[in-house]
Image (cartoon, rainbow, N blue to C red; front, side, top):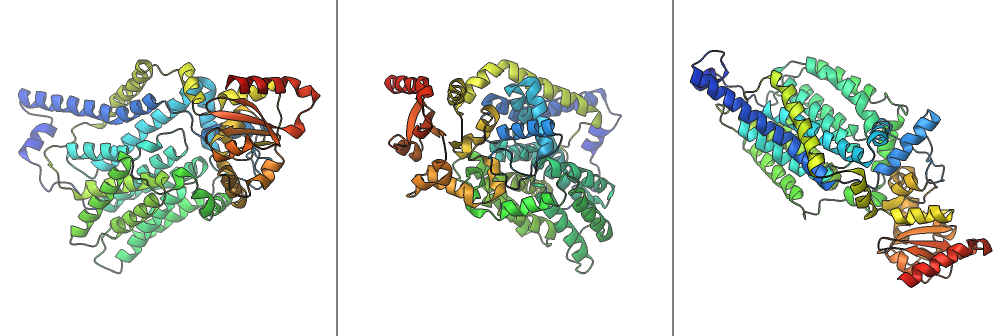
Length: 521
């Protein structure tokens, strides 16, 4: 990407940036610095405060991540077979480091800790995005606006998931690469193997970072043969960095298994196409349209340049493909497009970023204080979060099962599987991590819950003694009429069915509870 450094300082810039000047000029500079500092605090903290306002803790996956962390601590090892479905199939906890982190936060803060994790990561991501953009765009206002739009594109991903680390590390990596391409200084790239050594243990999407390195390496190699391709990255250095990062990605308890898990997930098109977050954008939300606008404008700016921007063009094509293929990957397009726009848009170079590195701690402290005020002002606490959780997860159903001492095998849907793993502590038939242990079984479970014609002969349903079912799903309505099951409890969210074959004289209390539940309806 082209440099945005001015060829010659203007008189206004000298007055603002120089140590000398009239008292009026110095006051003006200080006022501008204060204004810019306030804008940055809002830019970093406002999305996080909105994250606090949503107070989202009903994520379907965070619960099995918490349970996996507990398992790791109990066994002092990472699992190599699925410990939660009872299937015993090969399985990898590829986000084990994230799991230990979020489990530690949860132990100390409870549900508030899940919101605090999301909000803190949002601040870090916003700051990293702004750093990437402002080092490519001289105009302070344009840099701030691009950052705000980029953050809005990925607002739907501000949940307690490990993918927030992928967004952060990808942004940091792209920042280092773009500066190396612009300046030729390669020392900053030495941080990348360290980044990948952490990334591979936090989230499986480290592959996106390796793809960017491969594009940069290809550009450096082609630049030696074709004069139309320009980069200051030396191919020898880039080759060494790429190999070091590939090897660093092996620094996990699973070694090459990290790559095999990645390829295994990519091959499971059937099951993943049923998961909402893995589907293409629906364009029913503002952030989807923002991403589309980013893609159009970035493509237009690259098309009008007189030179062939190999790195930017290939990188944008890669970002568009994976982001429009899966809505959970829209962050790739947001980060890439914002970097391209920052380097290609011509702004007012007199409207520069005036804050120095010494202001960074003050901005960081102010952003954290804004988050704390957000928690207090919005009244986010564990009691309120527990009530919100009960509106989306089968909290009452779990309490009923525990109270009556009901036992599995359990038949459940995917969305609730993670929470049932955490709170019910019995093997489940479906949860988010089950996609890592083969495609046929989870795909069959999906069709059963959709009441496919052969639903009654589902092997997992046939052996189930207990079913926890969302009342709105088609299968739940059929189970009400199925003579094999008895409705034991029901609320507005979940229904609990018990296999009649498992009932005995010792279950009279359960039968009475079922009659009471039926009469209350």
